[in-house]
Length: 270
Image (cartoon, rainbow, N blue to C red; front, side):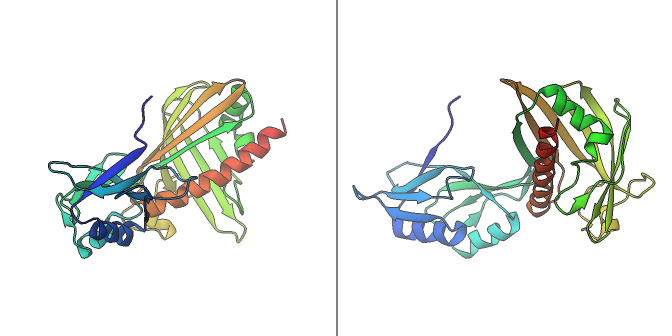
């Protein structure tokens, strides 16, 4: 599949454009040794994303990029403070995040996006039957369903469409968080879709504020987990949707990654 791997930003005043993108997004920009062309590095090679360039604007040339940011509000303010202009209001992308369009100092239209969805893809060196079992049988789930410095003392699962689950996670300091949800779709060894909500110990749904979190949290999130066989190994993909902002989804992603590290270790014991 063809992918966009480079962008070019035309500029009437390259120096002014370079200052704008350095100040707003902290990009590293260096002049190419072969002409009036400035190479743009948007991040390390380990990070997802693309790099590009700034070059002198030609008549009628235009570009429209979408730039990933950690906080829509923060970067909207930085854009306007550095001479840019907001063209649209903040627009929600259901399940994904928020975006909006802006104009930079050179008259170019671009978008920014705050991604609030957790997306994780992990390859396990284990048969799909073993990964499915480790994900769907409570005695296995208790071994890994908690981030670092947490345990999962209780895991209850009624694994059928319309059935529910109830999990507890307990920190090394003794703090306990409960979660519950309902299974919406189950395809054995292929896919599980469920809701995700905070709960009390009796399984009643409670707002996030019950655990000291913000009022902007929705009462219900959605988790989609898929299982795919790859040459005897298993590709596990998680999409966790509905977080109020990138900050909270980033914390959730860290928790998922640490739990998956435990799952990987658990699978190696089989």
